Image 1 (cartoon, rainbow, N blue to C red):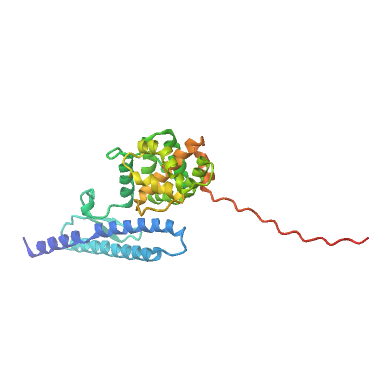
Image 2: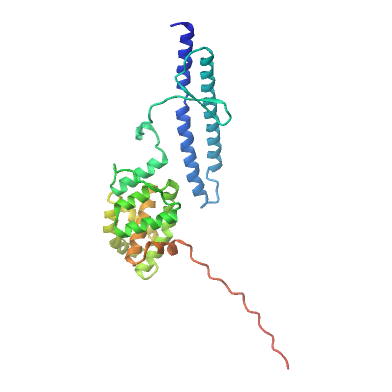
Length: 296
């Protein structure tokens, strides 16, 4: 091998070892985290790190652009030297050459390989709860927002259709799915009040568990038995027992319990809106001014 060929081999090796793939994956995960925190931000008066994450994503994107530019420069240099490059050059909108190196398909990530993307994390947990691990990924559009997803979940939970329940939850975007945990507590509290005939109290928890336990187990066979007790206990203002729930479990089980209580009351899934919406504040009439007696 000549000195020129050895130089070309080292340049190609260095170019392919640039951490383009790692930076691209990190930027994607940070973008997903930013979207999720932005949704949480709507319910809080604190920034919750959204500006910091947005800045980090911008820095990563600049670093990724710099690495791709470096690969492009290496490919151009090899071309000037008359040496073939194993990378593929594509043009950006600015007509500057950028190199996309061929790479093998991305392997499935396990617990030992680092954090999986949020989408995979959500769908894997839904499959675990519903007992559908290994089933085919569903097709079709997911619910556009958490309120619509709750209506869909309530429909399938009321019908006892575990396969369609799993499909609706799996194809929902992660912020939409986790948003169920924010809107179901109010619905559960109001549905519990209608089911009991009075405002739910701590000693009503057992009754609510009894009327939902069987169907909940059929729909979410792998859910922790304490999940329903925690969620319905909050609706009954029962003292918390310190149980920490998986965030996906709170969202999924809360939505399924909502559907089960709707069915018990004979309500359709579209009726869920009245239980989720905040109660209207009574309008206070202005005090009437006393009228002075008229003298004739």
